[in-house]
Amino acid sequence: MRDLRALLEPLVLLGELHPALQTSFTGVFDFMGVPYSVPRVVFTGPPAAHDPIRLAIFGGLHGDEPASVLAPLAFLERLAADPARATGYELAVYPLCNPVGYSRATRENGAGVDLNREFWRGSVQPEVQALERELRVNSFHGLIALHADDTAEGIYGYTRGQVLNEALLEPALRSAGYILPRDTRGTIDGWLARDGKIEACFQGVLSAPPGQRPRPFDLIFETPAHAPIDRQVEAAVTALDTILDEYRQFIAYAANL
Ligand SMILES: [Zn+2]
Image (cartoon, rainbow, N blue to C red; front, side, top):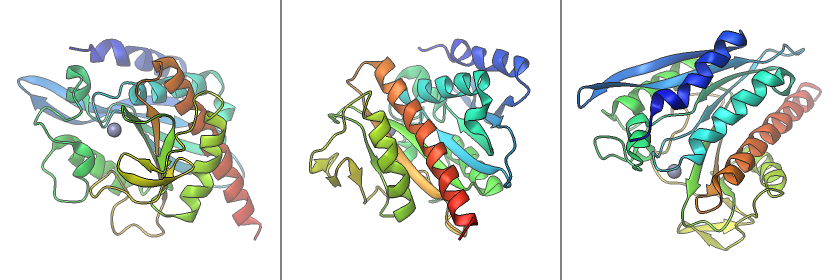
């Protein structure tokens, strides 16, 4: 069993030192007599000339992908040390979306369900219900989900065929490509891929509420699970930094049109 308290304690301590970083626990549920919850960390960056851009970052939907949990935590630690990296942003980070799966190192949650096939399909899984509530209440401008794939030969991502997603993913793959190579195969995880970008996607993956308009950008960034974990974390943190920079430029450009 992995120790969730030891994983999250640094975050709580960090929040005591940095008022810009607030940790809370949403969707408390019980599994085999033990209480679990989905932690949420809100980081408010220094203000910019525009309204805050509200993004959500998700890790650990699959409990056997530890890099996707450690990367958002490392990202938050660096933001606390250098808040300017998130200027103009309000970030809601959910580093541990599947706490039971993480503690038991299983892809599925305690009920044996793959949470990333359950969204907006009337799921009864408490983790999915908690995250759907967060997505509905916050109407985020963008969503980034982190995963690790044990069949991948390098970093890659899903664009869902959206132009903005592709425009954000490509530079993220390029900058993270200095840390881990890109998976350039024509087929990744059974999907057609081009330069590490896949347009199709599974049904029921974490996404914005079906009725939300305008649609936020929603990216999935994958690291190769067999690569050293510190490299995976570094690649994912670099991708997150790049997406923040690129989207900020996009917003500034759109404002000047
Ligand atoms: Zn995954």
